[in-house]
Image (cartoon, rainbow, N blue to C red; front, side, top):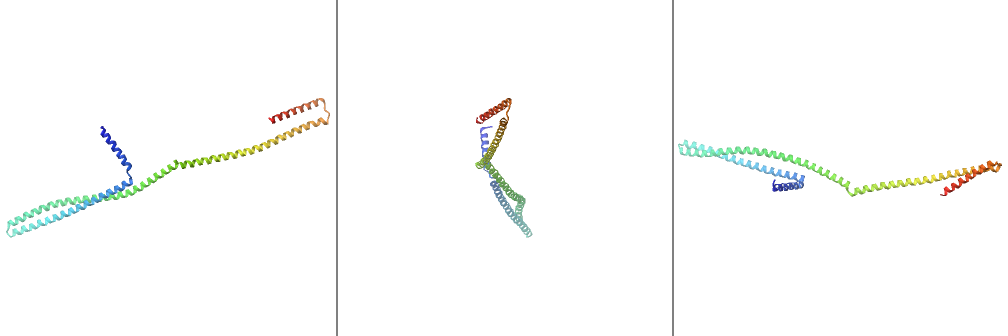
Length: 257
């Protein structure tokens, strides 16, 4: 394949692509209807001219036929008067007009067929134009619907992609985050209150246990004062008191630490 053939194909393809992109379906439909209307006007003019030509041919045919009949009568008149030369001349004129009439008759028959064909074509063209106009309105409606749908899809796409929608979604996430933080703060505050009550309840238990221990110590010291105890009992009591003192001392250290 030559370089000029390839170059020509590239140029044609680019030109066709430009034309395809530049074509507006609605404008092309309107122009097509106008072009068909122009063709219809030309067709009607052609039919009118053909009919006019037929009428002229018909008039000429009738005229030559009448002249042929007239010279036929003149030839008969001249012959009846005994003038053969004049009769012969009249027959020559009659022959000329007759031949012309025959030619015009053949031409007239051809024109009649041509006019009938033109009329059929004219009727078909009118029907096609009427159908094209109906289709044009339907196609324009479909085109408008397609453009509206395309614009709607583009609008939806822009809404999904534009910064306003993104900002709206960010604010929605921020509100949700603030709600979560607020809820967490409330839960932590509730836990703080519970811890205070738990501390108070725990402190009450410690005081109760301390009072119980004091009561035990008080109960252990009373029998020693009321009744003389044996040496073994005294030693045992002193030992228990010492252990309690040690526990109290250890408890104080633990509390201080």
